Length: 83
Image (cartoon, rainbow, N blue to C red; front, side, top):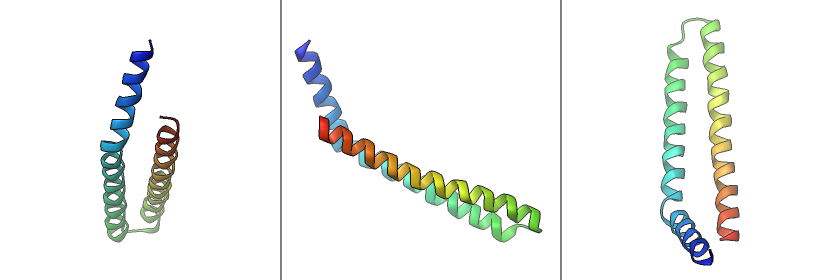
């Protein structure tokens, strides 16, 4: 059982060192692209109702991007601390 736990610990440690920054960067790039597309949609909105809908989507995109960065940082810290 101890050997399996050591293997899991080594795998998680290697994953955090190698893959986690790429996953975070991919998520942030997707978030920035989403915000850019929403900005383009806001510019092309024809009336106030469409702009309100776009601004609502923009708000949730920004909140999602902030939460992605926050939770990824917290999870990375916890895994790096305990493994």
